[in-house]
Length: 526
Image 1 (cartoon, one colour):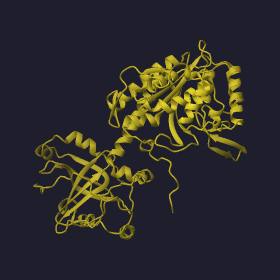
Image 2 (cartoon, helix red, strand yellow; image 1 turned 90 degrees about the vertical axis):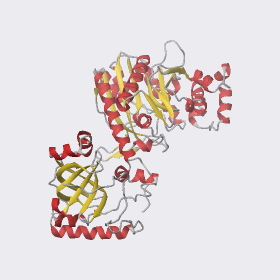
Image 3 (spheres, rainbow, N blue to C red; image 1 turned 180 degrees about the horizontal axis):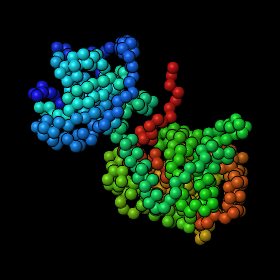
Image 4 (cartoon, rainbow, N blue to C red; image 1 turned 30 degrees about the vertical axis):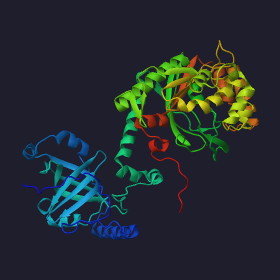
């Protein structure tokens, strides 16, 4: 059979129109309400004819797999092979050309073209097709072939409308241009923006890679509560709720840390959790109130082991997810292949802000004066009551943190800002703790765990005092966790990795909302 010559579609036609061989100029000015009214009328006609939303078609093939398997075949080979397929998807392009019609249909893997004529589907079905709309979910069975221009297509022998689309897709010329609308109506964004679909496919691949690596290294995946009687495991302002049956105040999890370490006490020596955590903080390109991180704990390890393992983990995940340890992020190279840098807080300040050197960085008054120059509120409880170590950390955050493009471990944090970390046996006032930075943002935080119950109790009491002094991110006293430590916890290393921030790097997205399917937004105006 000789097929008509076709123009290969190179772009989505996402506008509301009906095309004929005599009139192929879309009217893109049609009022959306009028379009929806017309489509609702069509739906009412479908209801009158029988089942409007049938659920008895199961596609046996996918667009991408068909292109992969048969894309290189010649027209002659395909005709001879008589490959029969069954496929369904959303109609993204429709062309009515008299005796023949064409539709570009998109499923979860890609696009493929349908060829419809009276001989294949009957004149009655072809006529019905002419009244279907872009966005409709359609299904077909038929023979795979190639057009004269080499486009892989399905010669439809049976054609059905499975789901009627009442709301028109964005038009071809503007697409889903409003960024907030893309976040708010992610379902539309996924339909019309291939880059968005690719981002979340890559995210899933990377998340799977994280799990695979952890399991390969004998970590056991666990689940811990998301509702906590006491918020703990991090310094953050929690979301507060109320449990009616127990008549008690509860908090959404800010971190799973204290529960995971209870499992270490219980004898599970390697555990991890990919968890949703909630912090009642501001929204920014790198913060969302609800986020995903992974925390993992390994008995008989310390922060040096953790840094080596975290480096290996991130490098491995990058390779599995993208094919390379060398990433391109926002136009610059981010190379995870070389050994990551390791600097103390003071060393990082001296390297990236060389105007600060020597003994001045040990002078609290000098540090406060410099912080004031950078606009830091000295009356903020976290700063007002801070010692030299915490002031150094605050200065680091102001002058050096944003310059840490290459993977860099900042090590040896002061005790006063590390209430759950083991104190150094050799350096007074610091802990065996690190934070990992890439592209100027924190990606991971880990330390040798504090397993001394009396020391931990004193640290909690210091946090309570800080909270009483006005620090609403300070920790509560967790008596049950202290009780767990009193049974004995082996030497342990633990780390948390911000997976959303990692996904930003792996998918080359500058905003955390770009890697969250449904980021939090202000309530939509009525």
